[in-house]
Amino acid sequence: MRILVDTGVFSASISRRRRARFETQVGVMAGHQIFLAAGTVAELRYGALVAGWGDQRRQRLEQSIAATTVVPVSDALLTAVAELRHACRQAGHALHEPVHANDLWIAATAIHIGAPLLTADALFKGAPGLNLHR
Image (tube, rainbow, N blue to C red; front, side):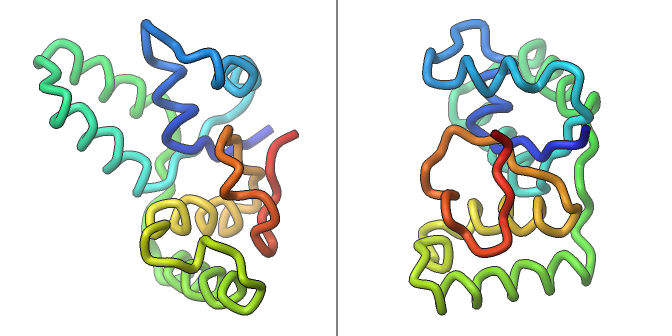
């Protein structure tokens, strides 16, 4: 089964010091085809830079990313982002707010590829058209 994994869960899956709140979601990843949104990859790389990771640790991050399918940004994805933001605005869902721009892209990517989103973040609950992995 294909699943799109959000940044927090994917980060926890490759961490040596995994936070307990992600254990359930990380366990779900096994046996699934893992997809990542382009924004997740950017967030992961940014986090590594901010944390001052060395070359070896950043290479391990790149190997983990390479073992997934990164969904490319396309015109169809751009439309999905715009449509989801509009739907969230109409529904009063927080994903339409600029502060949640990266999360909006992650959710829209899941919708775009027709895969459930694997997340531990309650922000995504109730987003129009978004299926969360149960």
